[in-house]
Amino acid sequence: MRSFIVRILINGLALWIASWILPGLDISTSAATEAVAKTGVTQGTDTVGIIAAYLFVGVIFGVVNAFVRPLVSFLSLPITILTLGLFTIVINAAMLYLTSWISSYTPVHFTIDSFFWTAVFAAIIITVISLVAGRIPGARRR
Image (cartoon, rainbow, N blue to C red):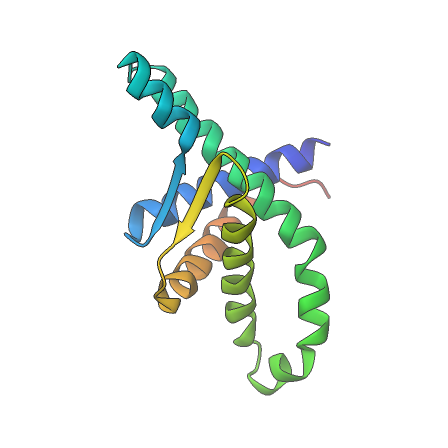
């Protein structure tokens, strides 16, 4: 259970950094936007709402990586071998697009612009951040 929560936090952090670096990634909440429009209050609740939105998308991304990615990786094993593993970047980008599609049915919307390279660069950034954060002592059980 602890490693699942740590993985959600790492995914949320990685998504936040990727959306900060790349202008084509965006996470928005329709509920927070409506609350600000009604009350005019943007302090406190806005920051908590944004953090919760990134954690929520991190949960979706974690579930997609836990259940869908192994199947896609297995089915694409021949092309991954032919490309010497570089096709895994395309698989990670596809998982981001799947996360974006799933989140479109929730109050939190994770959007990627139509430019495919944005998803590829985001996949590289998220992978590097996840690898670095996974090496932090206490973030991973042995």
